[in-house]
Image (cartoon, rainbow, N blue to C red; front, side, top):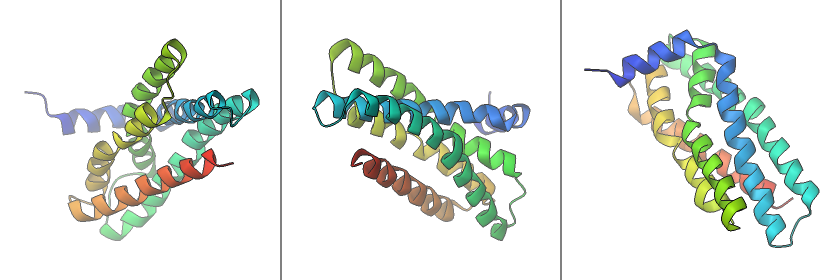
Length: 169
């Protein structure tokens, strides 16, 4: 029988950490692009804002999310974490794999059906990152579930609040 934990750890250890930036970069690029498209469809923003949104989201996923991984790694040194900084960055970024899938679907539904998708697909995709992130942080915290839930909740709140503030620019 396949062990998801073992498979995940082996996969993360075999993959260069910077490849994980593609996942988080694309996930947030598409999420923010959906936001720009929604605001454009309602007449609140122009087409340049839509393009700007995608670029800002890409940067958010490539810079901010890995930086959060670094902060988590630094904090979890308190709990004698043996995981490397690269492992932390990779797992935090890869937690947004579900967000990438929802981002792709959201763009498709937005373009094909004209739906406003940033809430239905974008936020949902970000929420799908919670479970894998809890497990990653728990692994770094030597099995301490409570601290992993608290850290993941703080990250999730930060991500959603910062996205909300972006939408109000």
